[in-house]
Amino acid sequence: METYTRCLVLPSTYRDSVWLMHLSHTLESLPGVQKVAVMMGTPHNKAVLQEAELLTPEGEAGGANDLLVCVQTETPTAAAEALREATERVTQQQQRQGNGAGEAAPRTLETALRRLPDANLACISVPGEYAVQEARKALQHGLHVFLFSAHVDLEAEVALKNMAAQQGLLMMGPDCGTVILNGVPLGFANHLPRGAVGLIAASGTGLQQVSCLLA
Amino acid sequence: MLPIRVSCWSQAAACLFPPQQVVVGWVHSCYAHIINVLTPTGRLLTLQGEGRLQAPLALALATDVETLGAHLPVGTLVVQDLPAATRYPAALRLCCTDVPMWNGYLQVCAGVTPPVLAYLATALATWLCRYTPVCGLAPLLPTLERGPVGLSATCTAAYTALAPLCTARPIFSVTTFLTLVRDLVGLGEGLTPSGDDFLVGLLAVLHVTGCFPLLCSPAVCERFCQCVRLGTSQLSGEFLRCALEGHFAEPVAMFVRALCIREIRVWQGYAATLAAVGHSSGVDAMVGIAFGCRLLASQVG
Image (cartoon, rainbow over all chains, first blue to last red):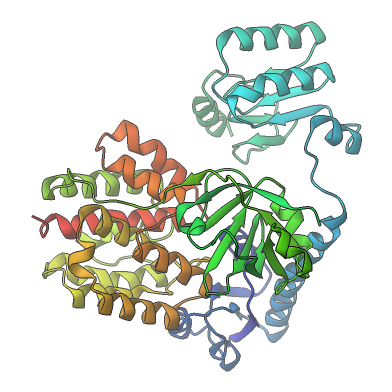
């Protein structure tokens, strides 16, 4: 079967590795895409791409500080579509950064609530010594609490749970690593189908195992 | 713009700041929660938010770095917040007085004998195969005994460089070291390619075992730097240059120091932290450490 290879060279483009991995996975999932490589254009990487028949003369011209996005597809249209998607994602991220310039990330729970007045749950992941105060504040605002933080002493934990129970709120944690609430994952969670079974456990890993077996 | 306070910095970064030098450098790149700044001497500083220092030349700022980065186009001037800096058209002023310093320099650890290295190599390889079996270069570890079956293109290329050292067990010489650098630098996925992260791990082992000064004369260091300049990105090259000088990012240094204590309950917490760095950077550095321990186990003494 005939294949089509195209390379996009993004000069002096730096993105963190997790973003690069996501881009690679996104492009791989597009229709008609057979192979994808997203790499810095170092000499060794270009040799690997050449070996994999993923390097074009455009890619060969890229340097070690350039990001190469190389695709092999079943049709020329699929290749063009994949590179268009890659370009769009790079541009989108730049624009997102630009748009965010006027509005700093919220630094307090109160600011976050002003921006999201309908929020009903707070995820708290701060060092343990500050976690109790933040969790208490969230409960006072009528929010359910997912307390990812550890190192909260037992007395404080009991006090938080009593406070939550009195208000009919959930107080999950401290050291709560995995939750799926109404199909929404918080912390670490497996991808699971929705069903009629609810699970709760003191052991997050055990709970994940049981939920996976049920699924 | 208001000055931004530097809340912590690495010793290696602090050394690049003479107290009265106004110009820190120019913005080189911004992504996620990182701003890289190119200094007048050609070094790359990493500005980050508060928390563990993610680079050997890191400065933690008491602000939201992602938002800050959106205001800073590449090439804009960064200065120290000094009286003399007012006449400079800077987009970012860093307040660097009384900053707590973190030392990421790895010193020689006296207890790391050949039997200890052999133990650490096995223990770490076992940990990696158990917890991160398909991440980065980790799949390489079991294949060094059994052959390169089912490896990715990057792992296969790394296997070609590393396997001869496991089977023939040559003396780990300057030539071997420079050949490894030549074969691995700039190899693989990620912002810092896997081969570079591996070499960072290997260099950490050379430093804690005391092998580094025996192996790396100034001429060897110059050849190393030349390979790095030609073979990888400026950003990744800075990490390698720092590793050559003995300076490491906090997760790497903390892990190696914990590893030298030789108590799994101590080091595996740091291993988990390091494994979470980047897409596979932390794991690749640990593979380099495991391989370095294995290689030197039969040669140090």
